[in-house]
Length: 354
Image 1 (spheres, rainbow, N blue to C red):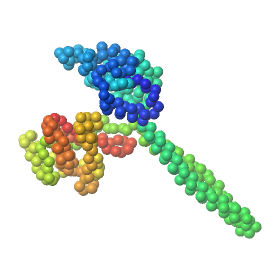
Image 2 (image 1 turned 90 degrees about the horizontal axis):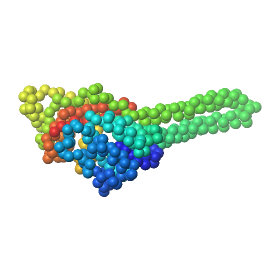
Image 3 (image 1 turned 90 degrees about the vertical axis):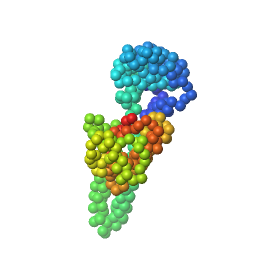
Image 4 (image 1 turned 60 degrees about the vertical axis):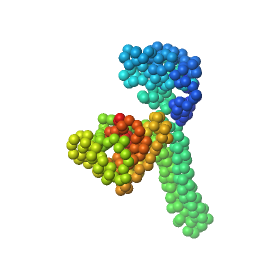
């Protein structure tokens, strides 16, 4: 994506909010027409199209030239102050370099959406868009609450010791000196300890802040073996009243397709999926997500501990069947689970094919 008016982004959340609004593509414009964009973006596009022709719009090549490999092809979505470019991975590095150099030429910001989390400004600086600015606010509030709590405890204890020392001073001729000296020693030791105790607040909260703002580390595809990958299923085969009926249909389907007895341990538990889990059925930005309003469902494991393979597939089937029964045949191909190292949260992808 190349972006005009980039200096207006002062915080990460400002950029992300703007980006989310732009990529909804809800403006009443022709996103294939470059003429409603700003002048620098028009100049960038008119030069870029000669290197990477658009698949749509007035500059699109003839149909017989598409898909020949003669030149890179891209889909351009042109907003007023940004141009979003989608292209195949075969030519991405070559095209990225050209697009980046042209962005510098016309003083535009460059955002490699599928690459780094940095917005490259034409003056050579970079703007990090990966960390949510809200974390700074959360950190400040958390730190302030902790300081108030510890200061409150410290001040109360210190007040009690000071009052005791004043009383000891008043009665110094009798018992005051015997109690006052130990009290003074306790007060000094308490002051030293409380100072360190309060100081640790900043260190503790700062460590939490670092953990929150660190980009999540996700296992690579090479480290992940899909769950239930050997189980075959077609989501157009209907809904089922209970898991037993579903299992019998699943067993029959697998044996008919493979010609072998179905012996997959489908009743085993899947520990990586929590006993109470939200499932986003359609990826944000897809036609299905728009049609079904994102369609987030909440499942509870029947045993309140962990889902079994048959249970999770049974519940997914009954949710997906009403939505996909009129689509092309939708096949189940497994579940990928990734653990985000910092938060220990597990993200699961249901793999579908058709």
